[in-house]
Length: 407
Image (cartoon, rainbow, N blue to C red; front, side, top):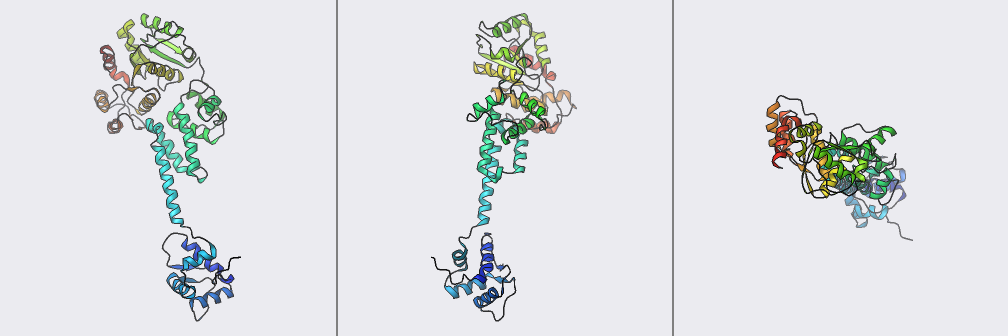
């Protein structure tokens, strides 16, 4: 059995506990206030300090005097004595600093993640998560959960598959990882609400609607994409109907079901331009008719069919060029399309905006602004001018680009 330290007296235990606690803070200590001491403890403390009278029941003792008395009594420091009596003294200040560093590193990692940087509106989501703190107080568990959420967000919009299929494919085979009510499901849905500018869903019906908007178990018939001048090679039904419509100078509307089972199809290399608004397609058909270059419309926020077609076009060698409205929502849609399809901006620079805004000022307010990843100065200019510019304002310039092949 280990011998007790000579200063480890029962009556002094409350005092040594108070000293241990104060030294554990990691902050400078000049005085220590003890917990209640009984008569034996007061007598032992008076003997240790060489006092000519008993201290109070809850005495406050200068650390320097205690240090001198302890060294005289046993040749050891106060820190060594309380360590011998009560165990190692932690440095809570250093521990707090270490944990703060871990938290800062975690939130810095999240804010700098490529999924967030590609769609800066997700910084609202990051801010909410940071305000609410760590999962179970653990940076490691929080990072694991956020990694899973970011993996899912990178895979969305989905291709009309059920949620369990998406979960199993992207989350280590766990088909129930995104089940309603799970922490991960809530994280992803909150991110989607920030992305689409909607309220966080508060009912099962609203959650299903938001998942559907992100392409999960989407209706393969109602999800369609509108295009003009799309001449696809091959003998499959999608290729044939696209060529027939293009050669007749008509638009083609393709459903997700058709795009998922296109038959034999090949995409000619070359530029494909993308617009946000159907009216630009109508103007292009009026100008070019059956000679219209390939032009795809997102019709606002792109649904699953739009993203599916653009990914197929880009994956088969077409270069994608996107233009949308110069307003807050238009910038977010543009960032989304570029992040999900690899498209590059088309007449979407700060200079393009300033030139177009000069045509309509004073115009409608652009609304809530979030960064444009391809041109950080763009949103600064929009915040300065506070003028929204819809695509139709510069439609002639867009059509001139199509006519000359300018990108």
